[in-house]
Length: 318
Ligand code: FES
Image (cartoon, rainbow, N blue to C red):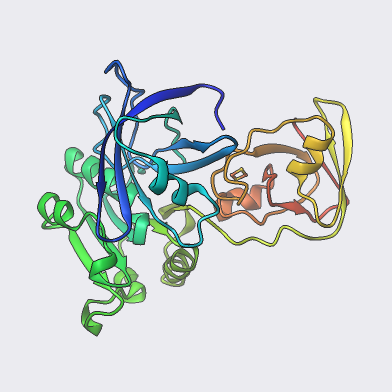
């Protein structure tokens, strides 16, 4: 979690039929918030020691408020459930400044935005930004059924030309078919994907199979089910001058914390990138859902809340 947290007031809460609550957050005194770009997210402190990340879904450019959409997830580890239960209009909550690990690529000539379920939220900000810049795009919104889709009215109103809706329980010809969608795409087309893990793996796999190179596939996972266990190894924290052993059932993050080395962390699921560290020596065993294929191959960074080592020893710049 960021050290520079901002106190904001909940100005408005809208509960969509789909179990999605949409919140508008502003500084209590109305002062501007830090500017953000499409794809950015903020940390939201749900309770003591419980922080979650949410994409900003309002049009970038405005600094008077942030807007986030939160799905009441039945498998919640406390985050979304707590927000749905406790976040009421008028209450004060703590958030971080926006960070963006999922930016639009200015080189894209055309963009395909693919949002699964609540993964549509960053796509809303992206769609606003692309329309403001006059760049062509399509927004594919995939959900299990129409009644599980939030934002439908505003999407239909704001992006009538670009919106494509896909419901799993709808007619076969409107279901999302990534292989057909990605076949023969010209080189200037970039793909942006966000949604549940299985959905993202499916869409990204189809994009790769269609020959779209990794540099044109942009994604942001918001949760992941990662097995962090594996063989023990040694980690040298070079700047701190400390060496620790990471046990089979321990993460690098935990082993370093035990030795008094505190690495910033947030999701602890390998999706947000907060705990990313530079690797000086050794070969990481990447298990995260944050780094791109190219970044993994470089082997000079590691997400220490979940990844391990292929080598017996890793030297980190911490
Ligand atoms: S804390 Fe989020 S990726 Fe490690």
